[in-house]
Image (cartoon, rainbow, N blue to C red):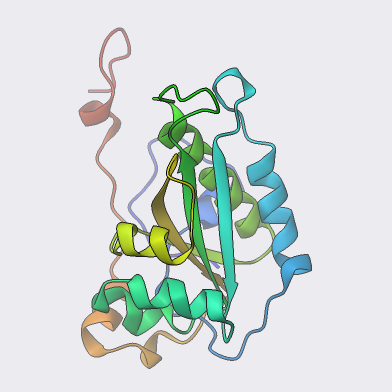
Length: 194
């Protein structure tokens, strides 16, 4: 399913055209590790600096303890809709390597892995909504991650639900067309998109 948006300046591949971040998830959908596997496999095969692969994922399926743990750390504005997703995923970066050296690229590499996850999930007919509104320290402690790791973001995953199930304020946000800054605002140097 796609979502209304302003016109693209250049054509995109269909999967990127279809990708968006809904808040309305199918409340009765059940996903399992087999259905989620292709998206995690895409994340596994994403590029990283020096092939360090400084990412890991903690997956919770709706109704299990891991899902509840992740959900409880979300900001209240995210909890109200994310509780209906089929899956919540904590995205974790290893910010220090095995020798104790900082991995300054780890968050960037995790972002690439999450982007690969998102594109593959979209190809599989799933929707992904990424969140920064959560208590990262509490979630890291509850998930017992290593001191060399940091929870960077959380993803809600599932199939599109009915936007009318959302609170009124979120229904309005769900219906708004997607907007992006023009290329002329984000690209400089020798490329001129003015």
